[in-house]
Image (tube, rainbow, N blue to C red):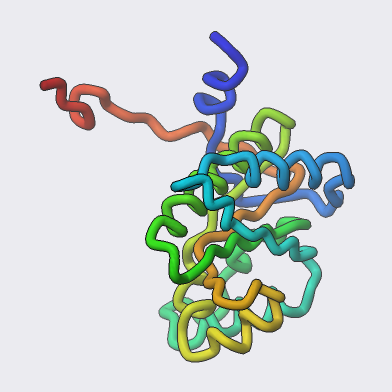
Length: 176
């Protein structure tokens, strides 16, 4: 089996990281993997904001996410204490920006797996970053003018492992 298919087969969401920071080379490789993703009409509109896991802004996002939540003090923050969080944004006027961000984040997750790193694709902060404090967080995250949050991914060295999910081709595929 080739390396890409192996990374796809082995990858699962990582919900526990060591405190070891990514090297510049590791981070650069992940960013390049995201930016090399195909985009509709070759717009190349995806923007990546790199946030250190200890940045107080992430704690502020977590606090906003938890307001009114069923669990008052969850055991982990939304990025499971990963040392790095990549926030992907796209031109809000471009219809395909959400799809392009999804492709880019999957490239990052698969690149992380191939490098022996863990990743967690994050959507649960969408309401915070697109809600009433949207402009505040867009400015704090230095999103380009006219760009909106689309998705995020936490990345770091794995402290836990998890088996990839099982699936059923018979249930999930229809041949015509």
